Image (cartoon, rainbow, N blue to C red; front, side):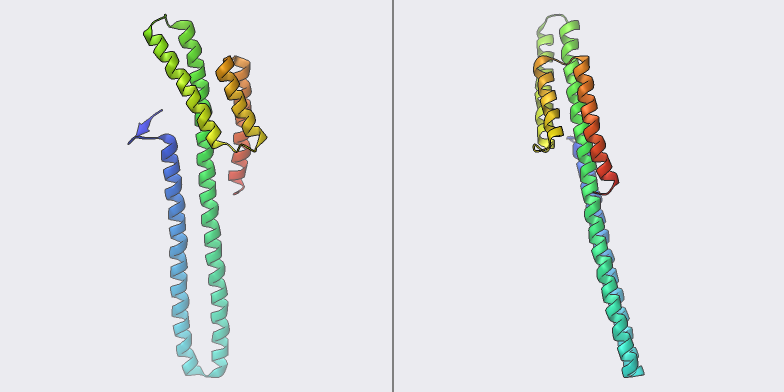
Length: 197
């Protein structure tokens, strides 16, 4: 797995997603501040008009200020909702990428165990490579366990498939079943991202 500054691609995706969500929130806060300043300026102009125009104009300006306040509140609420939705979508996309990477890594390392067993001559290097691949499989299974919701049947079924492949070996049929099951989970999550959940 490629690393940059000591962090893997998943960590960078999470960092980028967090920065993007933070920037969106800052933009919402900045918009809120600018809107409040505009409302304050409008109130000051309204005050000058009240002094100059009398009570009937005063009533009209007060109504306009109330309308501006309601509009400002609605804009602020919409900005906060949008910032939260963007953050959730970014986090869900990072989760999708992490799960895809872990299952891909598992399948690759499981395949490599077979390659090492079948094609490498018996040696200390072979034993070291088998140990490395077996350790990597365990790490992938644990990472998938930490990524999934243990109360969702589809997710727990994926972990069970990975564990079976780890202990019993990765046949082509088992690999295709894992791929299809993972694709179904990822598709469901991608639909949630697209719908803005």
